[in-house]
Amino acid sequence: MSTPRKEWTLEGFIYYLLSVCVLAVQFFLYLLRSQQAGYMDFGGWVYFVASCLSHAAQVALIPYLLFYLPLALTGWRRTAASVQVVVTGLLSVLIYLNSQVYALYRFHINGFVLNLVFGDGAGEIFEFAPMVYVKQALLFVLLVLIFVGMWRLAVYLRRRVGRRVVCPGIVALVVLTFFSQMYHAYGAFVQKPSVLKSTAVIPFYYPLTANRLMLKMGVVPPTNSSLRFERTGTSVTYPRQPLTVSPPPLDSTFNIVYILIDSWNPRTLTADCMPNVYRFAEENSFFENHFSCSNGTRNSVFGMFFGLPGYYWDTFEADHVRPLLLRELLDRGYDIRAYSSATLLSPPFNRVVFGDVPNLRTRTPGDTSCQRDSTLTADFLVALDTLSTSGRPFFSFLFYDLPHAIAVPADKNTRFQPAWEYADYTRLSNEIDPEPFFNLYRNCCYEDDRLIGAVLDGLRSRGLLENTVVIVTGDHSQEFNENRKNFWGHNGNFSRWQLHVPLILHLPGVPAGRYAHRTTHYDIVPTLMRSCLGVTNPIEDYSLGCLLTDPTPRGWHFAGSGMNYAFLIDDDMILEKKVNGVLEVTDRDLNPVDDYRIDPVAFDGAIRRLNSFYK
Image (tube, rainbow, N blue to C red; front, side, top):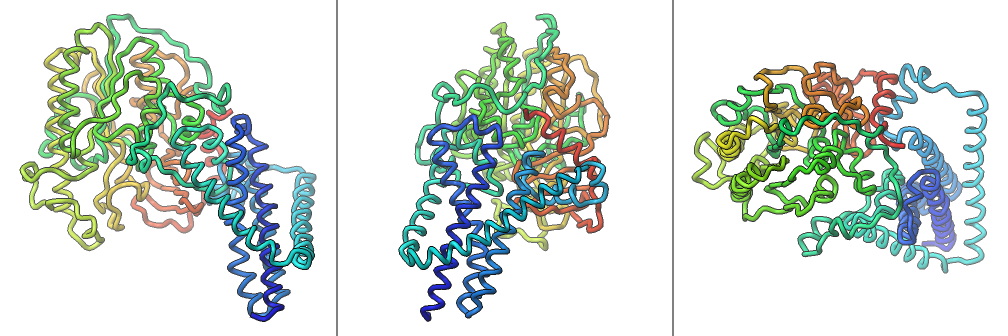
């Protein structure tokens, strides 16, 4: 490489380092303008500064590698400099605009927001005075001048310090990146608020987590007693108003049993496949058009217990906010127990959902899901003798895993044939016949139905169904390419084949009935709070749901997490925000809808409702 081109490359690298500093300052200001700053401790500040610098280094690397280096090495120095200044400046402007969007909606810029700002009807939401536009224009000009001036500074520094800046600069950025990633993995595992809260404000920053790896390595997660608040109060209002309660008479206090089936496809709820659960549905309230609040377990279970979207998971985890439902049950002396086939440590349901429950059982012994499902059933039935005679009301959570594992012993894989011997995911494609795979899955559901039947018989034989509320549902569904788009399993899309699950409610004294209106997991908490606990608050004080029996249209149903989520509109349209920020609009069968225009007023209302529990 000729000497001039080496100097040009060095100038570009120095400009890159300067850009990193400017962009990092912009990221840093996100935190200072937010409530999260109140959570910071020394370690949190060191982590956040390192994260701002490392993330800025990744963002600024794009124009340097893609534009500057190729042009400079081919002799186009001025063009290379101009392009790098312009592109980096535009990134800075985008980061500034995103800070304003985040302050308003707590969303970083994505397809939804762009449609909201530039779509038809945006003027009905945003009305800005002329001086606002003037101030924004002046700020943009200032940013441009800063980045132009930085190039002159880069030329000056190249002459003054030369190559001496290269190695320290690279080493510093590598060390900062490594430190921020490792510290986040540690902070996420020990629930360090200063780490969890500050990470969320940096746009499109997804650092490393290693909870499962640490558990496999034998690292012991922190117990509730070892967790320490680093700030008094929270950044949310949950509930929005203190609960007002008219407790029912003691002789009408209900026990509550949650029976949750992981990855439950509604096509299996037939008299042939799941006879016990099907009969239970026929005898009680059966909600045929019920939707989960996510296509994955973590956010689905969160929504079932909080009545709110998994969008709040990170905030509630950092703030140590527990479900109002369980807090109210504990205050009333309920004996709360969990029987879960999969561990409650990952995702950390033991902390986020059951954090206040004493002596929580977090694991069920067994080498396979089939063994663990059988064990948890037997253990619950043994405990039921004590629970039924203790004089205390009880809440029990039974979480079955076989339909998620899709694996049963050969002697239990016989009812539905032909069936695969095991789930061979390498064979899945849009061309294969799904029936043998689905038959294996149905055999798993049949086995769990036998176990759940034993639970229901155990409640019935002890006379407990007369004063016990029983809910049977799935955390989310399991797709078997029903849409013919080559989707299998869950966590792949937000169509009904990954969100639609049966829901059966046994409420003592309520006659059997089928309900065809759309209901959601958000409706479970309000129904229990009203029916079992006598909470008289408006539901919007503590949930985004309705009563299960309320036929009011659910409108914009939020499903997913803060990274990848969708709004389902009237069961006909799916508006999905991908992890990369892209907005994808499809009909209910995942067929693209190219000409769909989002109603910005309706969307603005949906977002404000979604954020209504933030201060």
